[in-house]
Image 1 (cartoon, rainbow, N blue to C red):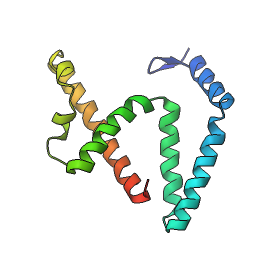
Image 2: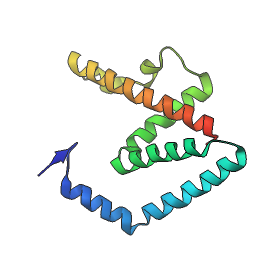
Image 3: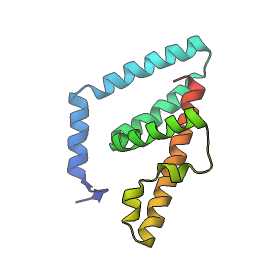
Length: 132
C-alpha cells in the first residue's frame, strides 16, 4: 500500500469521495465564477484569479489548509501591522516547543518554518494584488 505523509491510498480515495458528496467541487466552481466576475469588473486579470484558485484548491485537497491557515493568519497580521520585518522567523517560532528540540530538530524546525513563511508571503502578495 502506498503511503505519503501518513495517509494511505485508500484514505485519499475516501477523502475524494467525501468531497464529492459534500459538494466541494460545486462550491469551488461557484466561488471561482464569482471571483472571476468580480475581477473582470475590477479590471484584474482573470488568469491570475484562476491561478490563485488552482493553488488554493490544491492546498485544500492536501488537507494542510487548517495548519497552514492558522500560520497564515499570524503572518498576515504581522505583515498588515508591521510589514516585512527582519526577525519574522523568530517572532513566529513556538518558543516552548523549540526549547524541547535537540540541535538537528531545531535546524529542521527553523527550515520548515522558513519555507512556510515564504509560502505565506507569496500568498499574501497574491491576495493583495487580487484584492482578496
